[in-house]
Structures are given as C-alpha cells and as structure tokens.
Image (cartoon, rainbow, N blue to C red):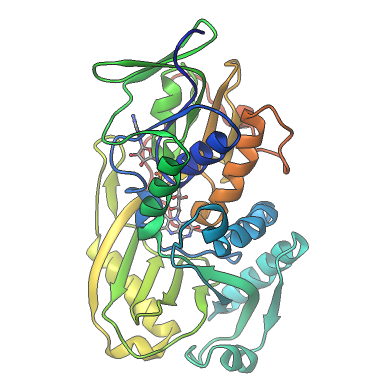
Length: 380
Ligand SMILES: Cc1cc2nc3c(=O)[nH]c(=O)nc-3n(C[C@H](O)[C@H](O)[C@H](O)COP(=O)(O)OP(=O)(O)OC[C@H]3O[C@@H](n4cnc5c(N)ncnc54)[C@H](O)[C@@H]3O)c2cc1C
C-alpha cells in the first residue's frame, strides 16, 4: 500500500486509545478516529472500579496486571487518573448470596486473586461502615478505583506526545479491504492503513458488519449515581455478592453508587437515560450495605452502554478472514482490564507474541440474519 498509515484505530474509548498509544510506541504511524471526544462514552463515564470481585475468573490474570498498570499510570501514561488502591469487600445478605460468594471467591482465588471469605465481624473490622446485617463477605486485598472522567484527558496528552494523529468528532462510515490494507471511509475523506482496529464498544457489531462479519454484541445500560460530599462513611470498595452494585467514596467525599438495576437506552440511536425505579432500587441497596449513607442526597445520576458477548468473555483478537484487521472490546469490567488487554493485542498487531492469550472471536460469530437486538441485562 502506498501512502496511508500503519494503523487506523476506530473508537477512542480506553481500549482504542491504549492500543493507539502502545502501537505508536512500538514504532507505528497511527491514526485514531473517534466520533465524539476521546473517552466520552463508557470509558469516561463508568464507575471507575478497578476490582477483582466483579471480574470473571478467566480474566483475573489480566485484571491483576491491569490493576498494577493503573496504579502506575503516571509511569506509562504520563498522567494520573486519580487511582486509589485499597481493599475490597463483596457482601452476602442472603443464603443464596452466600453460596454465590463462596463459589465466585473460590474461582477467582484459583485464578490468582488474593480473595478470602471473612465473617461479618472480620468484615466490620476491615470496613466499619458496612451493615451489621451481612452473613458473610469476601475480602480482596487488591481493589480500588480511578476517576474515569480523567481518562480522556490523560490519553489525549499521551497520544499527542507520541505523535498519534487524533481525529475526534469524526465518524467512520464504513471500512473495506483494499490492496495491502484497508480503506477507512469518513464523510468526506478516505484514510488508508495497513492494519485496522475496531474498538467500538457496543458498536462493534455494526462496525464488523462493514466487513460482513456478524459478531452479536449485547448492550447493557448501566446506571450510576453520585452523592453530595459527605464525611467518611467507607474506606474500601464495597460490592454486593450478586454483583449488582459497587460503592466507593472518593477522597473529596462523594460516594459513587454503580451498576445495579439498569437504565433505558437504544444503541442504534445512541440514546440512554436514567430509569427512576432503578435509581431508587440501587440507592436503597447501597444504603442497606452502608447505613452511613442514609442521610446523604443524590446529586446526579447517569447511564452508559456496556458491551457484552454471548459468553461474556472478551472479543479481543484478529477478525477471521481479514489479515491485519483486529477487534478489541466487550471485556467484562472492561475499564479494569483495558490497559493490559490493549498491551496484549498491540503486541500481536506489532507481530510479536502476546504476553497472555487473546480472546479470538471465531467462537462468537453468528450466521448472517441472526437477531441481536439491544438487551437490558444487569452486570454480573
Ligand atoms: C455506567 C458504566 C459503569 C461501568 N463501571 C465500570 C467499572 O466500575 N469498572 C470497570 O472495570 N468497568 C466498568 N464499566 C465498563 C467499562 O466502562 C467498559 O468496559 C469500557 O470502558 C469499554 O471501553 P471500550 O473502549 O471498549 O468502549 P467505549 O468506551 O464504548 O468506546 C468505544 C468508542 O467507539 C466510538 N465509536 C463508535 N462508533 C464509531 C464510529 N462509527 N466512528 C468513530 N468512533 C466510533 C464511540 O463514540 C466510543 O467512544 C462500566 C460501564 C458503564 C457504561
């Protein structure tokens, strides 16, 4: 291919931005195309939890390495994203949650997470703010959270410093293979690249459709709420065993209540909004877990799209049948694992052996015509 760049990354969420950064550091000429501002979707509005307790067991080895990367963000990203490293507790209030907690803690521990089951008394020594009504908790010494809002700012600075061509507020219309690479069609221009990465979050399905590849992606509509600033009520990341909710208090005093019952939305029109009954349910559950929240006020609630594959494992690997085309997304608790997933796939893009196995999408491909409507699911 003459002209063009080595790599066009489509989608400037945390996956696309990190791949663009690592590829540029690996010596590639890279263009990143994002139809909004960088990391303004899920990657900039998520709950920021960097946790093993909501991460699927198969992803624990990735999440542990990624957690370490987030903690050391100033070293490789050059900028702080407000990371607080702390312990985490997942709580069981019912017999069924107790069983779920034990099973998941066992699986995650076997995968390398430093998780152990603790009694209610031990849990309250670790986190005095937790409800006395719990039956059991699992405790993980590696947990924490970032300020996701800072993600776009941090990556933008790093990408610009690394010489990546940033095309924000630019929508890719379609992509097609062309001699020696790919043509990436914008409204009034066509970019050419030897390789292309699809990092479109919930829009991976229509993106791969440009190549005639049918990758069904479910759309979860996660809902968050934040309280006003309040005196310290908790010092760990607290989740509920069923995986419905996570809570943490930021250093300036606000508490973010994340996950839980879902909001309302539509991927095709890219619209989503708060479902009030979900908000009430989520806040009630949060107050049940951390009674000290009882007197606070919710100042804001918002929603975002999270992508999930049929088997809830990532779509990270080559696009079958298309040399030099790659897909990266649908990682459960994707913000936590993103920098390490991006590192691994970038190694493959650079022609190296990835440090850890990728998650090829062959297993997920559906026959053309399969119905994959937007679905409202809860986070695990
Ligand atoms: C409300 C919420 C809370 C969450 N909480 C947590 C949490 O606490 N911890 C955790 O680990 N994970 C959490 N997640 C999940 C996490 O945010 C996502 O897994 C992760 O951010 C996905 O990153 P991504 O880069 O794959 O996708 P995205 O961030 O969705 O980025 C995809 C980008 O592609 C762009 N795009 C789409 N179509 C085009 C096109 N045609 N041309 C150009 N650009 C295009 C979009 O504008 C978008 O910016 C949460 C998600 C949500 C929504």
